[in-house]
Image 1 (spheres, rainbow, N blue to C red):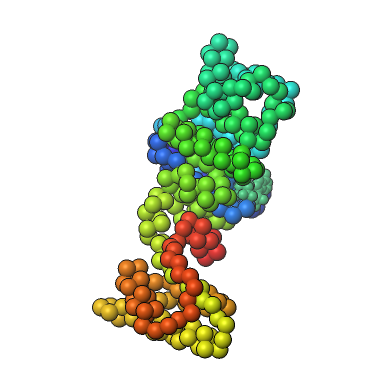
Image 2 (image 1 turned 180 degrees about the vertical axis):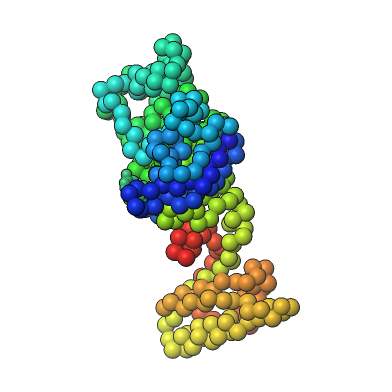
Length: 318
Ligand SMILES: Nc1ncnc2c1ncn2[C@@H]1O[C@H](COP(=O)(O)OP(=O)(O)OP(=O)(O)O)[C@@H](O)[C@H]1O
């Protein structure tokens, strides 16, 4: 559906996008993640035809973008900017009709589509209200509806939920869950949890370059690091000694067959000890045996693993 090839963008002498290439297959939902200033907005604006790349090529549905075919190209995509601007004196319905006409729809088709969309995005009771009276969540719904009015093949959204309160965020997330069944989506976000909830693939951008990209499920599997976290109640020197003893046993424990260390990167902080396990199943078995073999002042035991946030931190701080 979308191919981005060797994209570069310089502002003056500063290169802010450096050789970015990726593709978005039809029907996928792709999240572009990255810290502030990584280049997400710049990349999305280039893909949307709002900003000219210094070099590189973007192809959407077989149409390679050039200023000459910009209209034809833009017809195939919908774009929700980071800070969408509305005419606050218009009603939501009027605004959608206006957006539809800008995309070349006839007045009657624009009105019909606008009415359908107001309902789809849950604004049917606010069609005649002035946009100035809409909440942040309602405005964002309207923004998504305007990006969708001409039924684009690809919907691009720049930080669609980051400016919203938790209620607005939940509303939009639920809406996007519905929308992703109907169209291909590429969106940027800082909200890693949202990306994890919604998308199939992720692209992590750092300092204008792609640091990591791929299918979310396979990346999580690849980078999965089973962890164990124990909490202790340390009231006496004896308790302290038992915790130290347990730590020593863990850091020297080896896997029965490979003789590889079983618990690595063990970190003892006051009353909490956390370690990575080099094998989840054997690690858990060894841990149960260790804990049953003596009396340790353990009050809580948690097994966790890498989630997207940990993966993100690992990649952007590398
Ligand atoms: N018009 C411009 N002129 C000069 N520098 C720019 C311009 N637009 C963006 N930049 C710079 O390009 C870099 C990437 O900015 P961009 O807005 O794409 O990052 P971002 O990942 O979207 O950040 P954020 O998450 O904060 O929105 C930043 O260093 C920014 O200052």
